[in-house]
Each structure stands twice: as structure tokens, then as C-alpha cells.
Length: 480
Image (cartoon, rainbow, N blue to C red; front, side, top):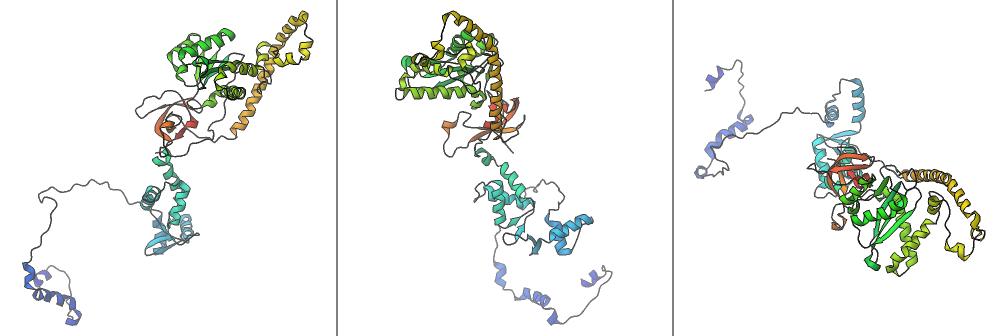
């Protein structure tokens, strides 16, 4: 057999060696005769988990060329002295390699804060991020804390901090449970009223202790120019009551306004009130949900009226409805900071006589003359346009001061049409349903349109538009 095989070999050489140098082949030749004969009588059972007639396995694979990781050039240089052809790249690699060493065929980085750090290729780096961040011992750390923990565990790759920040930014659970943002995201914008009684803000206050007639709410309106306030105590807040209040307290006294600003209460967004404003060509503006700052003038007036009621009532809370007119009278005859004038003066061109002028007669009361009173009142009306012009300038200056103070706190956040966002559960009216373990955000939703800077219309995953507008302060950009 050997001779027949030799005929097929072009060149060969036979070398004779002694038995002592050929121990492996000698042992193998004696193995068959030295085995116990009973060994071949044993039966071996092999479990076959698949039928022998089953078709071949089909594995779909995609050929992808092997990509060099950041480790390979450094490792090649340290082990074999291989450098890139480009001189600049070679110099950079040589300097970079001084911070690394090879232990057991693996690359390690010399660390300043501890022992050697094991260098990880991209796949192992991705696994390390997932395991440390959200694995068995993960606690969903922030980006910087995650990178620090990985370094302390002895691992390294060049973009560890950047990758950790991106990874935590896209974590779904981290986004749903992230803290609410209290800093404003857009600069302050103010509503400017061009003339008296052109623009009113309306809001609801309550619930109060039940007063006579089962009244427990206050509907309040404030003129943005003169700061004149109208308010009425009501038992129920309905569209019909809101419509009647606007007609009786605003239109019948001061004329049809150009604009009314309200929140998103059903009494202001329903068909009856909306149609009423449309028929009279009143522009009805609804503020963003859970963003009372958009109707700031009304909110400030609310606090002033509420404080006045509290201080006058002491413990007799049920009498608040009877005291409401007194508080309104005090508000109307007190100079307001934005204008420097009393609402009464900006409305009627003169100051009202209040009880103290009677109790301790003032000069105006003592020198009152019926004969020239009408002439003086006419003079006041002639001076009224100038007084209102000066008040308008003071309002503009006041808004500028407020805006400068407010805008110092602004931390801009960019949200554009088409972005995915999360919505605050509290702003969505789902706060009472939450518990300690509930997320603070829900979504994601898509930004459908921008009403104005910082105010958006949203739609859900099915493309259905969400009612009302939403301020950027109650939204958070969602990353995926």
C-alpha cells in the first residue's frame, strides 16, 4: 500500500529512526491488542433530538466585511511594530500607544486614577453600557455617573463619556421618570392692549366656602389696559353663566372687546360660549394647558382679590360673597404698579371719593364747589388721553423690566414640528391617579404644529390630534 502511494508523490525521503525516538507510533500500534475484549460488548446510546430525515438547516446571513476597531491599530503597533503609511497618522498613533500596554494578548490603558483599564471594542462596549445602566445591578444612572462607574470597574474606550450620555438620553424608563423642568424654556412674551377695554382676561376662582344662594365660585375679568376688574359670585360655572357674565359685566358697561383670553375650562371652550364670541367678532384666545403664566394679568389679580377676601373675613368664611364688592372697590381705587394710576382714574378721568375723604375731610372735599365742578370734570376728560398715553408707556416699561428678570432664568430647549415629545402627567390632569412609583411623563406624542414659539399642537401615535394647545414647559423631547 505504501509503495502504491509512493508512485503518486513526486519527491519523498525515508528516514530510519530508533524505537526510542518513535514512542508515540509504537504505543499506538500496540493499543489495539492491549484493550480489554469486554469493552466492545458495551452498547452506547446516543440521543438524537431531531429526525434523521429532516431537511438541512437554513441560516440567513449577511456578509459584512470585518471592520477594524480602534483597538486594532494600537495592538498591531505594540505587538508587531506596524504603523500606518500616512506619516501624520503614524506619529499620532505612536504617541497614543505610549498610554497603552498589552497583557495576555489584550490591550490595556494606563489609568491615572487606578490600575490598568481593559480596552473594549464596540460590541463589548455596548454590552457594558446596557449591563451597568439597566442590568441586574443597574440603577439607571445619568450619563456622567454611568461613565465614571464603568471606569471604576476597569473598562475603557475612547468615547466612553459621549456614548454614556447618548445611551442614557435614549433610555425609555429614564425619560418617563425624569424630573419635571421648572426653568422656563422660552422668553417671556406679553399681551399688549392697544386701548382701554379692548382686551380682557377671564378666569374662575374657587371653590370657596358655600355662601348665600349656594354660591361657591367667582368669575373674574380684568381689563389689560386700565386694570379694571369685574367679578361675580356664582353657584355653578356653566357656559350660560360665563356668557351672561361677559354680556352684563363687560359688553353692556364697556362695549364689545376685541379679544378675550381664557384658560381651557369647558365653560370657555364649549360651543355656546365660542359661538357667542364669534357672533360678536370677539377673538377668543385659549392659553396653553396648565400654563397660567400665559394669562398672567388675570392670575395676579386673582391673588390680590383672594388676599383681600382672606384678610377681611378672618374666620367668617361664608360671608365672602358679601365682601366681594368691597374688595373690588378697594382694588379699583388703588394705584396699580404697571400704570402708576388707579383703574378708576384711567376709566373715568378722575379719582373716586372714598370713605376716608369723608371721615377726615380732604382738601378736595373741603374746597368742593358745585358751580365749577362740571367744568373741572370736563378738563379732566380732556387730560384723560394724555394720562392714558403715559400709562401705556409705563406699562411697556414695566413689561420690559419683568421680561429682563424672567429671561435671565430661561434655559432654551428646542422642539420642532415632527419631533417626538413626552407630556407631563400633571399637566394632562392625571396627577391624582399617580402614586410614588408612577412616571412623571407620558407619551411619546408627535408635534403636529407650532401655534407660536413655545406653544404646540400634538397628535398621538395613531395620528389623532390632541385637544387644546400645550406649552413647552409641560413637554420634554423624546429620544429613541
